Image (tube, rainbow, N blue to C red; front, side):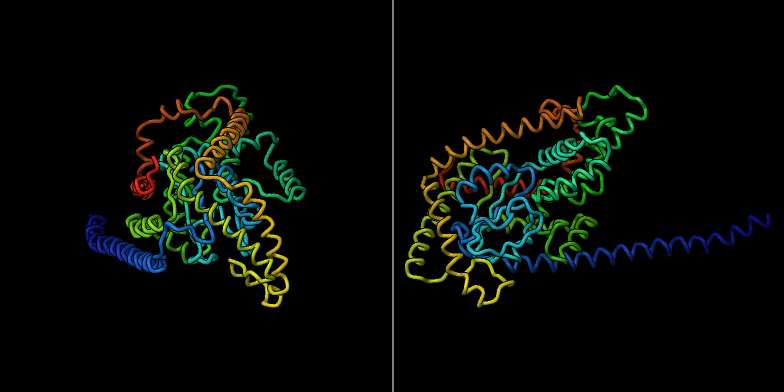
Length: 450
């Protein structure tokens, strides 16, 4: 009886404590949201103010190809841009290097997985931006498959220790750039590689020689199931809404320090993503070209007519101007600012740099003296060879995780609930893709490209 009376007396106190705790947490959550909302709004306002209002249809001095992963951008780089620009006109390591300094005399092409924050290193008024977007569901599938494909290449090694030693020696010897140097694969491939090794070791320790599933996207004895992949914190931070964050300049690879706080706020409070989406939509509006992976042929034709034709005209004009400049003994300034060189150094080397780049431009001009139709012919020939080599390498890699195999038929067997979950996790990208489809349709109509 005494115990009951004591509990009755303490009950109101306990209730007050519980209510106080809930209230405190509610206020903390509300304060956290308000702080994040202010942070995101401030970023969005400054981003809107920095947009360029000039004619977006005219190609400027520098072409920035913002390559969203798994959209077919590698094909564009090798089969369009490499045919249009001389090597001397590419920004250093402009395709494959994770981090680089783009300051180079006559740097005319920047093609990279770096996000839009790269613009802080570029002369914005002299830069045209192009990009390609893809259906977000297909892009998530492709990202998952490529992560597995590249990671599976390392299964030739006995364990991760021997792999690490070999990789270190290979890098020291080659001094080149691998997929592991490129964002986002720098994060996604090691994650998947460790998972593949762990599952292989587990099968060996159990003496397991059979697989319980025939679903390549849910074959947990061999690889991480797709459902686990999309719900992992790494995927939420890097993959989902990846196109939106990349064009916003808010990836974990951003050059702008405050961008990381903005990204974390949006990841924590999803409703704040609408502020980011509005900024990204305006950036798409201001781009020279927006392509769609699913409309491959139409996108390539539009690129040849809208971008390719202007590049040819620009480089031909540049080549003629460079010849004239050399004949007159004049100097040419670097397109991009060079903070590491003083004025005297630039002056002493101006003529030598100009002569070198001019020579490269003349050589390239002879190769690009073509119209949009001829450029498309060269493109079609190139992609046929490129796709063949990529398909061969993919098949060889996936043999290491047999019987898992990624095919269109296997994708069609993925449960509808899982597809709905991917759609929900990529709500910003879904809205952005729909917006990009409208832009693409307008581009086609404006340039009469069907």
